[in-house]
Length: 440
Length: 119
Image (cartoon, rainbow over all chains, first blue to last red; front, side, top):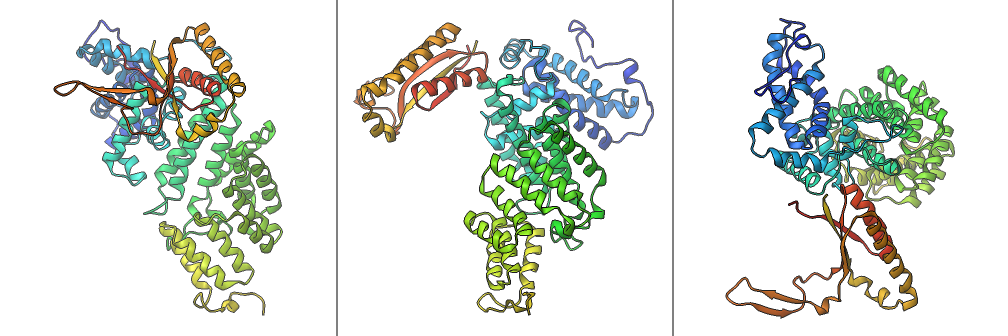
């Protein structure tokens, strides 16, 4: 990197920028590399200059240079390092140009932590610092999600706004406000102290899981937002790479992989949701499943189960079964028992009831479900409907499907549940569930 | 180093419970707050702190118009009001939040952490 005295736009030259000359390179390819490296660029510059806005602006300038130069000069041998260096030089240029240099450097002191961490402490990586800044508990949860996708994921504001169905201006304001709070409230750019790490990491996991879930089963409009799910997997992989010894992070990654692996079979050709038991298991991503299973085995060896590890283990049992009918439901009930001990929330107990229904029968499960009584949560109605259906109580099942449908706006799910309801003959008033009832 | 205000807001919903507390019951809280103050001073984080008289003792002055107008009572109609505060120095928000957690435990009240403007 050229020294600060050289002045001018000092982009890296030399061997690292001269390879692959003449290769055909479209904007799309450059932008793909840029997005992949965006978090690294922003994190590195934020550590150096202590200013998120400066880091983002310089990253955008580096992209502009890459779009101009790479198609002509070829892609540098190490595109990430090239982008970081170029963006760093652009940031320095900008600081020199601006009379606000002193202010900027003071801002750097506010955000940047110089104190060396104990060598045995958490692994240092600028992106790890950035993750903890983006997911700081002093920020509103929706701001944490937006910042993580923007600063680490490199998604554009427009993409994030689309992902969460809010106007772009709203999302831009949300991100600007969050960045302003980071600076004004002195939210640090560092890995939390060891004592705070489990809790702070829990906040990071929650953000990634939320991004994934919104992608996996969108709350409205379209059935899935694949880009959000893919992004969550990428960020979980990054976090696992940065904290390889943290078993809950491994558990979260496994959970996302084992869920994501089933995506190709989750919707039928007509767009209707296909429940797990009826999915074409040949369509599942085998590589993702193998990777997820390996992570679950690692977690089991460590033997410190947490929420995400248990959810991953449950999904490992599902993805291990050659067919829905071969699922080891007794194992799943045992895992849910452990999960309920950690987190006795109604949603966890509802999921446990589904597994109980497979082991102890629908009547036992229905009693559990009635006790849980989550009437504003559509899966509660769906589970209830399925159990009532198995018990031959068609009219009541119908009512439960209707109650579920009234709460949702996901096209694939609406189609599936409507069809499921309509298979039950007759209007809800009549007791005409005989055709559905397997008993003579 | 950045400065933060750690403020404790008096909640009228708590009036009854607090009013019913005997001096013997209050004593451990006073002691805990004293210990917290001592810890702040020992660490060098202490700038200033104080507890405020009840809101009935407040008076408003408005000299934005032609003449200064003095009125009885608080500025805001809000039911909650500032009961006391600490002003501390901390390297960053995480450090300030850790102090706030100790302060909240000591005074048995919610603590709001707010940074001062620079310069």
